[in-house]
Image 1: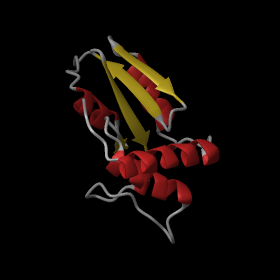
Image 2: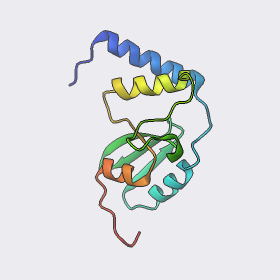
Image 3: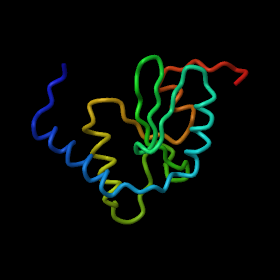
Length: 123
């Protein structure tokens, strides 16, 4: 069992409440294509609308935030224009504090690597 400090736990709860309260339904443009491709893979399950997608594979659940590639720098940082929005601040806090898997991605290959999926060249 993992111990979480009370102040960290409270911060995580507050982040989740705020994300639920202000959750936008706008998906990044590449999310639909990534989800469609993941759903074609044997043994992989996908759920959407969980900021952004949950992927199940080999008994584990992975949480991915899908970003458009044009919003990501070459070194993998999210490009920000102007001050960070409330949603962006919450996503960064979640990435730092969430005790389970949470990763910001922009390609199918990043997801496959994270879940340890060995891809059949015919797919």
